[in-house]
Amino acid sequence: MAIRTTAAEVKEIIPTNLTTTQVDPYITTASLIVDENIADCGLSDEVLEQIEMWLTAHLIAMTADRQTKSEKVGEAQVTYYDNFGKSLNSTSYGKVVAMLDTCNVLSDIGKKTIKTTVITSFET
Image 1 (cartoon, rainbow, N blue to C red):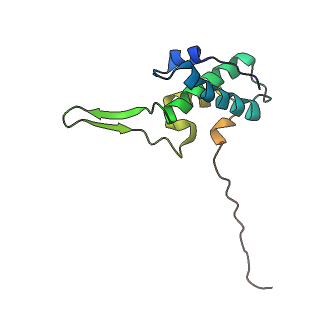
Image 2: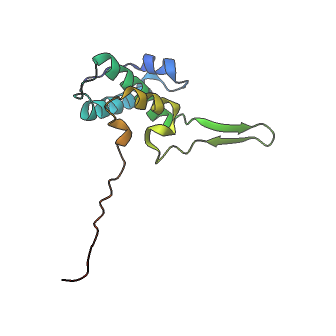
Image 3: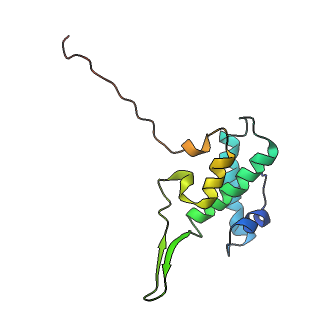
């Protein structure tokens, strides 16, 4: 597995209080996803590095540091984005990943394929 980004680079794009040690597992997961799905689809090493960095931020934003959708001061209230089930579109970081992935592979991860069979006749 080729780790392409660092915790310092990730922390430059996502505001987080996570330590380097806490960011590293997210990087490992992002690297695995990149290696298994798009490393051989013809993207340059520079693009793969960017995808890995933004994908790491996306994973952090989905779990440890969820992105705020709205905030209210009087009777304090915070609403978070519903991150699950929307794949890369669930965070601004994921949207960058989708834009960088010109192979259009990562956007389809987790989507289920539906197979439909049409019965044209009930006669035997």
